[in-house]
Amino acid sequence: MNTSEPLNPTNLSEEINELKRILDELKLNTNDNNDAFFSCAMALIIFLMQCGFAFLEAGAVRSKNCTNILIKNVLDSLLGILGYWAIGWALAYGPNSNNFLDHFFGFSQFFVIGLQNYAKFFFQFVFAATAATIISGAVAERAEFACFLTYSLLITSFCYPILTHWGWTPNGWMARGFDPSLGLEQHFLENNTLKQ
Image (cartoon, rainbow, N blue to C red; front, side, top):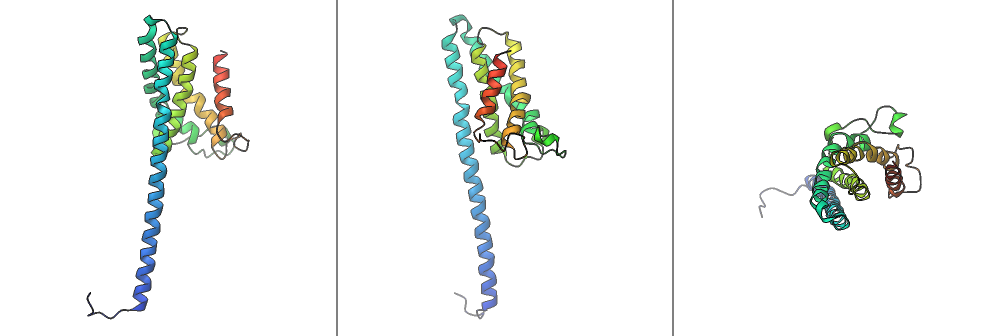
């Protein structure tokens, strides 16, 4: 211990305050990292539902269509992430400067430009992809390959994100409702797309 400098109580209290500030900042960063890890881990589990749906569909169709179903489910996820990345996130969570239109859809952060929370993006993407995959089971062996992929891209890029904006953003017109899990919006989407 160096005793050549006398202890100054003013400097000590300043140093203690600075250390408290640094510690609070570290705690905040740790909490953010823990939240991001948990969100990504749960999103990965939800994303694994894609495999379950693919195997369920492959088991429900004739054996000659198994490869088609499995490839369809892989492409469903790939096109889904491209559509949600390019357009879906912006429609679901992008801030909108127009107060009236903000009740219906977002209109910024296309291609996730300006996004800070990528864990939330991945978490929301897997729900959009799951919405398209649920529909894929209903049209197995009943739809052309290209038609289904187009349909899947529309679901993950436009339909699901707009319903998400309605229910999960603070300004959405359904946000003050009673359904924090978005189950109502999800079932509305699935029911109305399957009736077409």
